Amino acid sequence: MKREIFVGSVGIGGGHPVSIQSMTNTPARDVEGTLRQIRRLKRAGCDLVRVAVPERPALAPFRRIVAGAALPVIADIHFDAALALGALEAGAHGIRINPGNIGGDAKLKEVIRLAAQRRVPIRIGVNAGSLEKKHRGLPRAEAMVRSLLDRVRFFEDQGFRDLKLSLKSHDVAETVAANRMADRACDYPLHLGVTEAGTYLDGGIRSAVGIGSLLLDGIGNTIRVSLTADPVREIGIARRILAAVGLGRNGIDLVSCPTCARTSVDLIPLVAEFERRAARLRLDRRLRVALMGCEVNGPGEAAGADLGLAFSRRHGFLFRKGRIVGRVSAAKAIPALLEMIREMAAEGKDG
Image (cartoon, rainbow, N blue to C red; front, side):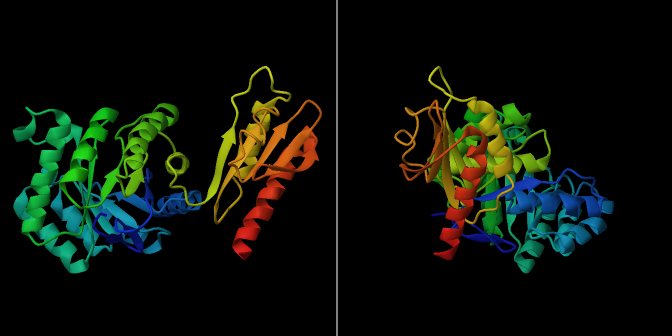
């Protein structure tokens, strides 16, 4: 089990669930726009948010963002230790730095001292594109880990252990290899992600493979899906990754068949309608819901689902835990299934 830290009220490591992070993409000076985006991220299921502090004039609006944010705020700092000090003074709940570009050990010590005084954790981030020269002859995954552990020892020499660590590459195999090595080497919580992953589709797939592989190994305590897209879309992918590896906390885990010649209804638009309408549901538990196009893939194949819908050539069957509980026409099938979901969610809340 990894060492426990807290970013604001969110526990990371220890026995805490894997948390989801994102990063705002609004201009640093746009306080209200940033706060609106943070509220949207929270509604989508985000636990922590990172805000870039790229220059000293950004510190004043950053203070207002921290004060008004609906989530704990991590300051993203590069190149200037004074920005890290200013962000800490402004109330940041966490700091993300790359020690290799912060301006030297003397300045880094100042940041560590103030973070220790304020009991604010620091994330040490090492990316494949910013390795120290002394490690560049090694395979990149190994070089990333050695660079990271050098920095960890420096922090430990200062008596600071309120750390989380990240090792990211655009290359999925490098990311996975580096994090497996780091997991064996130390007990600090790990932040997972594939950096510069790309568009919604390509980046989502790349992130799912990299992050999901590590989570299935039991590695990782907090995750960020990095997409060239609205940050809110990152949260949807992150939640799906957690659900796919059995770590989902609430919401719907959708099971649907790929369709074939046995399919007796036009299932694809029905599943799309369900996804669209189910996205508005706010559930306090995780439900597995199946949508199947024929009797073969119906209650039998999807018996593990909490609720489901399967179709014959005459009508749809609603089922619960593998047992048929009603029949419905295709036109009324999705509303009926959504109503069953609401009822089951209410049962869990009452229980």
